[in-house]
Amino acid sequence: MNANLAATAQNLVRLAGAEFAYPGHADPVLGPVDLAIGEGDSLAVVGPTGGGKSTLLKVLAGLLPASRLGRLTGERLTMPGFRCGVVFQCPDDQIVSSRVWDEVAFGLRNAGLGEDAIRRRVSRSLELTGLGHLAEADPETLSGGQKQRLVIASAVALEPHLLVLDEPLAQLDPRGAAEVLAALAHLRAGRGTALCVAEHRLGECLADATRVVAVSEGMLRLDAHPAAPDAVNALSEMGLRMPVIVELARRVPSAWLAGVRDEAGLKAWAEQQRLAGSRRPDTCRSKPALRPKGPEALRAEGVTFRYARRGFGIENLDFSVARGERVALLGANGSGKSTLLGILAGLHRPASGAVRRAGRCGLTFQNPDAMLLASTALEEAAFGPRHAHRRSRHEAEARARETLAAVGLGSRMHEAPLALSRGQRLRLAVASVLSMQPDLLLLDEPTTGQDRRQLESLLTALGLACPTIVFSTHDVDLALEWADRAVVMAGGRILADGPPLQVLNDGPLLERAGLRSPAVLRLCAQLGLDPCGSLAELAERLEPGKADDTGGFSPRTVPEGRR
Image (cartoon, rainbow, N blue to C red; front, side, top):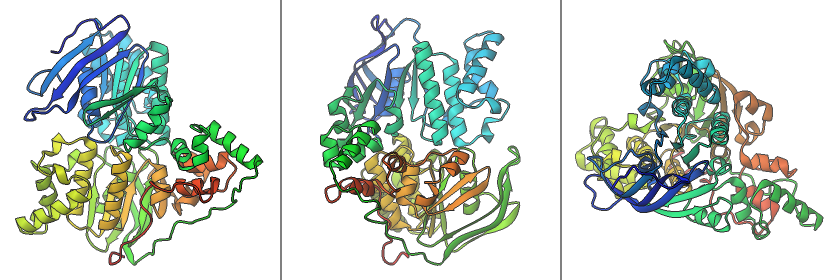
């Protein structure tokens, strides 16, 4: 039963024994769940990809009633006049207007507000989300991250009692993410708006959370304060990417036993170690193995490209990639990363300059739904080999099964793509490209919607299948540990191109590009240590010979025969 009654005096919304099953599925994908949210609560909803986070958020928001959309049982109780704002994973699913200002005003006009009130709320929401200068822009001309901020502004303008956000930081650069989180904190502090945020970026979303709710296999596994002793262990055991300071403390036995859980605790522990005379090397004990470079895989020379409606794009850019290289493209939203990938793949024809490719090139989009067209995951992954490479059905499906298994979707091959979570759909898009056996792989934000274990297995699969990779990302920690080169972009130009440790330790450069340095490098600076290229190296320096080096991203190695 989906009731709309007063929950209790202190609750905005409460689920009691709620279960939800999608059409055609006998077993529920969520529940039974008992959960209550009160005024001013800030919930961080976390869990592995496909665990039920998005379904839980939709049930809380009242978007999954008992109807043709599925079967909802149990109770959903709300306070009288309850208003809930929703931000979906894909911003394109919510944008309906041709002007940013009108998009934010759309819901307010439908609610019957006067023009003066609309102007005040739209202006405030755009400023809160850093979009004031784009009020007259067409949403189609915005970057993925700017679109994400636009839908958040639209939801905030409605002044809801509860704001539900499904991975709102996924497409945002570090500065944009910080601005959005500050805006949400301001909304909660000023209006008592409750927040329910599903995220994989735990380091950011847990900072201001009053509760962490973990969902796995459709069940509520944890509902506790983020600092509760059992919470850290429970989240780590679920395979989630914990905040770097927590991961570091877990790798250093004496720090973990000393109760280190934050940066202040780490600094105090390190000082105690120094005073006690513990050895702390001044230089890294190990260096990442350099991956051998092969002949040139791609070269772009003097490339210029401008969007007809935006008036900007890429300006006189030179760029090259050697076989066997992993190159990370970094920069703020709108810096030109996706545009450059489109040019390199041949989707955009430059106005001047040329691009030369030595072999087949594969590209995955920021939004995986723009690539998916088949009725099952197996058909999707087999489509390219079957139709582009003219393979037999048997050959195409055999290749598809291999790639699906490699990206962790072997057990989901007969399911419809839209029945998968967004993170799983992204891996399906990657599998469909890998099944074409490209010589060069171009990935636009490949970390979206991935938990730690799935990200590590995905990176391993990518490295084995196609060692020459160019990927855009806002995950500077990933770029530091996994890439051979870091390329920083701003305004359609390349500001820096070099070894990740060198580029990502340049504070003024990162400030100019709207980026933050990786957490590992920030910790090194706070502890007065020389910079390290990975969490494992930093742990080894803090406690030589005792640190746990498990976990982390794939090593920089190239399989024989693929160099």
